[in-house]
Amino acid sequence: MFVFRHDYWAFNLKTSRYSAPGAYTMSLVSGNNDEYTVTTSCVKSFIVK
Image (cartoon, rainbow, N blue to C red; front, side, top):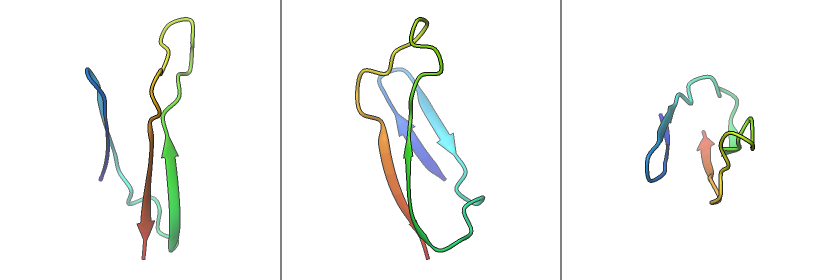
């Protein structure tokens, strides 16, 4: 499981869908900047062996 945490939000993302070995990078971006803007860098990496 992979967790993005911010002051008010936490996103728990399952990494089991990533079965191919390698390095992965996930980033959080807003789907609608008029409604919500991500102002800090929300990028995380993980490795599947």
